[in-house]
Each structure stands twice: as structure tokens, then as C-alpha cells.
Length: 351
Image 1 (cartoon, helix red, strand yellow):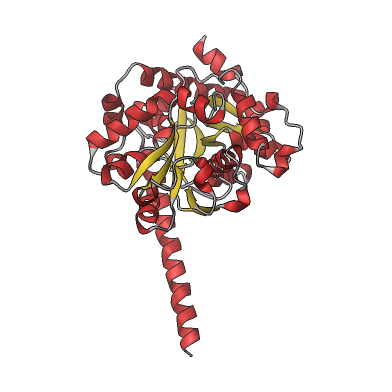
Image 2: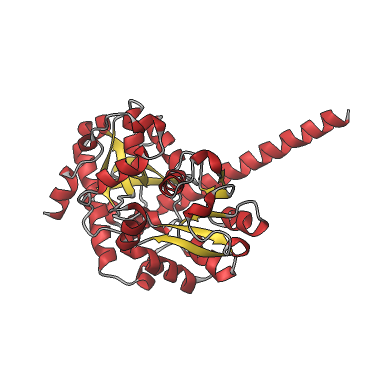
């Protein structure tokens, strides 16, 4: 009887958690679709973002807030999932027409028989930071010390998972010798770090800024700049991007061009405005009550962004090298990098 009651209670708790997550997703979508005008007119496009409030994906919401989608005659609905791998799933299942997430998913999907390409490359560095808890800072001084550790990632199969595995293997630690733990970002990541559920982990701003502000952790590796990417990964690492299924791109070139126009305009705007000015354009709740800290987080991450949406030279090769180092599916596969991105639309947008 006691077991039955316990199972019933657990089931009820699960349903409650699911309802809460659904409500959060709906709230995010509602906030996004309201945009700066949000009259619902124009060509409708749904884009799933691997965390709308993450600074690495900031161009998605900023483009909405600046009114650039509206100006192109687009009615864009921005949806949010906590991890890029979930945005990828939404795209390939046809729930959305575009995804804002890491470029590396295009290589992974090609090997799995899915043709997906980056059409606007937001960045030339990962924007990721490996942090370690304050209590473990003396024990974990480089990725060589990952052995036996519990390391936080946004989700299993996510880009943070990919990069963590690469850093481990590059430094002599097998992927079987540490435990990746899916803890998301923001409050869930910070809580896991503070409670000892993870010894460290890979995350982005504004989570990084909050971790440092709370004294919950210290930076081990900083990949928010091209120089940081070069040091950790050996080259430019194109990360956040707008990627779409190739068949859809080829069948909707006019719409894709309008999206590229809007995003490139945003990237140019970002390159000529301060972090504080950018923060002022974002939804108020993104700062979590501390606008100064939020602006600081944006400032730390700004170097990762391109100003033209063009794929950085040798960037795809760096990503392939990283994935082949640990991913058995890609390691022995022939990846056609030319099919993982296109500059057709951004070249016209910048011309």
C-alpha cells in the first residue's frame, strides 16, 4: 500500500513538473512573439532557440526587439528550449522552420542522414566557459583533472557536452572516465554547482556572471573570445547560428533571404553599440533584477559575435576536428562540410 501511494505521489509530481515546464515554454513563446510590434502580419516563421535568455543566442530576441523581422515583412515566433539539442530535435521533426543553436549540430545530423545547414553564422567562438565550484578550484586546475568528476552540461548530446568531451580527450581523459550531468543553465546550473551535484561544468552568460557574483565558482577555461577559442580548440569555432533544413531553404529562398537580412542588420547594430545599450533593448526579466550584471555578461560575450553573419575561415574544419576526436559516429565518417553551411544569403545581405 505504501509503495502504491509513493508511486501515485511521484506520478503526480511528474505531471506537475511537466505542466510547469509547458507553462514556461508558453510564456517564452508569448514574450517572443509580442516582439516590438507583433501585429502578426507577414510571412510566418517559427524558430526554436536553445535558450532565449542565453547571451550566446542574443541576436534572436534582439532582432525581434529592434523590429527588423517586421521590417522584412516577417512574422517570426521565437520559441525556447533549455538546450540546443532540443532545438535541433524540434527542427528535424518539423515543429519549426529554423533553429538557433550551435553549428556543430549540422555535422552531427549529416552523418545521421539529415541535411541541415547554417544560413547565418552569428559567431566565431563558442561563447562557452568551463567553471569549477569554489570548493573544487584547487583540485581541478585543467581538463587533465576531469577524471572521476561530475561535469555539468546543458543536455546530453548538446554542444556543451561535445566541447566538454573534446577538452577531456585532448587532455588525456577518456570520455568514460568522467560523468556528464544534464543540469541546464541559469538557476538549475548554479544550484547543482552550489549543492555539489556537479564539480564544475560548461555554461554561458548570464549564468557565468551570476556564478562569479555569488562566489559559487571560478573560471577554468574561457572561450568567449576568438583568442580563447584558439587556445582551447586550436582555431575559430563557429557556434551560435541560424540553421535550417536544406530542403526548406531551397524551397523558401525569399523567406530565408529576409531572415538573413534581419539577422545581419542586428549583428551590425551590435558591433556599433555598447553592452549597456544592447541590454536596454532586451526584455526586462532577462537581467534577473541586476541590469548592471547583465550588461557585464553581454560585454564579456560580445567578442564571440561576427558582424556580418559569414562563416569564419577554417571554422568548419575546427568543428570537424573537435567532433572527430571523441564522437565515434563522426570519427570514421566522411563529412561534406560544404553542405553544412551556406553564405549565399548573408553575402547578399551584406552586399
